[in-house]
Length: 115
Image 1 (spheres, rainbow, N blue to C red):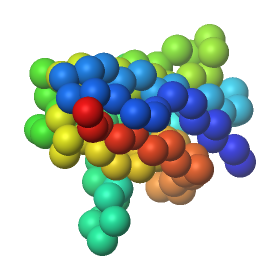
Image 2 (cartoon, rainbow, N blue to C red):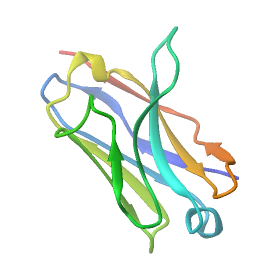
Image 3 (tube, helix red, strand yellow):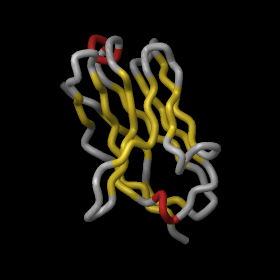
Image 4 (cartoon, rainbow, N blue to C red):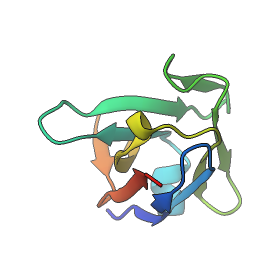
C-alpha cells in the first residue's frame, strides 16, 4: 500500500501551504483520509481528516486557516493552509484509515515555516 505525498518545503510566516496525497482507488474509496504532523520529541497529532461523506474535521489549532478536501476521481486528498505560523513547522503525514481500523501512512513531507 502506497500513499504518495507532494508539496511542502519552506514557507514564510503568513504564507500558504498546499499538500496533496494520492493512493490506490481501492484504498481511497473505502478510507477516511487524513493529515497528521509531528515534530521531534512530540507525538504525531491529527491536523485534519475527511471521511467518505467529505465532511472535514480539523484540529482546533488550524481551524480557520487550513482546509482539507478529497477528490474521489483522482484518489487524492489535499491539505491547504494560509496564515502559517512557526508552530506549523513539522513533518506532515498523509493517512488512510479503513473501516476496520487499519491505518496506512505516507512517507512524510517536511514543512518549515521560517523567514
